[in-house]
Length: 82
Length: 82
Length: 145
Length: 145
Image (tube, rainbow over all chains, first blue to last red; front, side):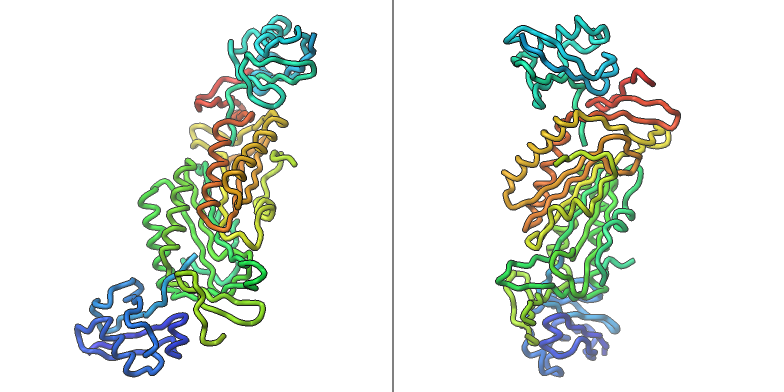
């Protein structure tokens, strides 16, 4: 099993009511698996969009990216900047 | 006759040894006529290039531009700026 | 080195980071918070960021700019927290021996930033309401407004 | 209003001239005196100008920029007199609601200036010599050096 740190930002933090959590997923789980797990354990996460932007260890990734023990996964509202 | 104020700048002021003079030229004289007149009365002006840049009343003009009484004619080294 | 700051951006300090006797041209870009007019009543934008990732992204953007314009020197600061109208939310400074490189490197960085940083904006209004601004520029009702 | 100054250009004051709550993007260009390396020994450039004409030309350039980018606000200052290495000889500030206009208007003004102003440069060296710099970039021996 792999323990992954999960972070929510901006509006997603408001929707989920939390900024950070940790989930344990099987080895070779994907970011998408992490998202499903989060939806199961955090009621507010049901209101996240079906396919939010995601980052893995500070880089934007597809939801199919594989996570490892100790990774940081973040779900990001549409990016702005500037 | 028309009295025209003549100005020299930068290296041209050094070559002519003067920054300003006044010349009297016939009505309908051109900037080129002014330059010839200047060459006659200011020894150092002989070292000016044959066709220097010229300005008439703060605007760059061809040497064929006609001058009027009270005009300001300037002979300008190659322009720089910035 | 962090490219994020919670304080007003000191342009002089940013210029000092990149300027040297070989710099002939310097291009600066400042992105400032707009009021949007009286009707909007915007008094500030609250910037929140995924700090570590935004910092990493800005570092990658600068590295790209340096690779493209090896003779340019580029610096950037992005505000987080509350930025009042007319204050800069981002400042980019690029110097080079010649102006074309300075302009191009500076423009490159702001365009890359606008492609998206993990930074989010919430417009704060005079009447106390606040709305998230998403990429499309359409306000999204915030939960707390 | 004169666009020429014998004193170091105060960027803050120039920014204040054009900034307003509707400005979203500001582009600044600074042209600075380069040392040209140790071999050249340049310590400053002495700028002389046909003041009234340079002022008029800069006014015409700004008017052109405003005609092309009506929503931009543009300001410029050009130094005259002795400008030490690393100090700005020219500063241009352009603000607009959106960054493209700010960049384009700023770039337009510096390119127009570089097309030629009645301003001339004499390089001053550590050894006391001085040479006029003509457009071609080749030094021309000055009479007094």
